[in-house]
Amino acid sequence: MRQPNYFIAVPLPDAVKRELKERSAKLRAAYDYRRWVHGQDYHITLKFLGPCAPQQLTEVRRALPAAVRGAAPFTLQLGGVGCFGRSDAPRILWAGVRGDLDVLRRLQAAAEAAVSPLGFPPEDRPYSPHVTLARQYQGAPVPFGEQAEAWGADWTSEPWTADSAVLYRTDFGQSPMYAVVDEVRFGAQFR
Image (cartoon, rainbow, N blue to C red; front, top):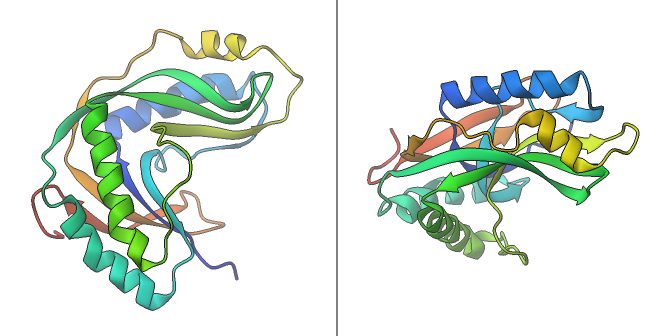
């Protein structure tokens, strides 16, 4: 049995998840990705941890509240669509994140700093906030602009107030596959 991965993320409100799911369903019929993200699994990753030994997980659960305690709720919004990888055969299709990005970046840096001493090295690439929609395009190559146009290049979600960070566990083979381990409200302890 495959060991679960863990990651820290900002959750999305249900209304935004529903909108992403509906938009993704329209693209799904036209563009062949190996895997589309389940509608309940959308999130904005702050720090991917990977597998955790039990003691590491206990330490992460202790470190996370201190890392985000000083954060105040802030406003986010999704907008547009983009890709990682080749533009004619994307590795990742994603929705962009807008709003208080400086606050989001500080939160990401705080999460990274909190878990680095626990055996989770800092990323060696700049933080690029996004919401993954699909992985590994496998259809006939098409210019990415075609997919962006089908999504709605000028699309934006309703803004929302981000007020927590979540430690998620990946339950491989499940759908949805991300389970909440702990949620930390900004300015508070675990609820």
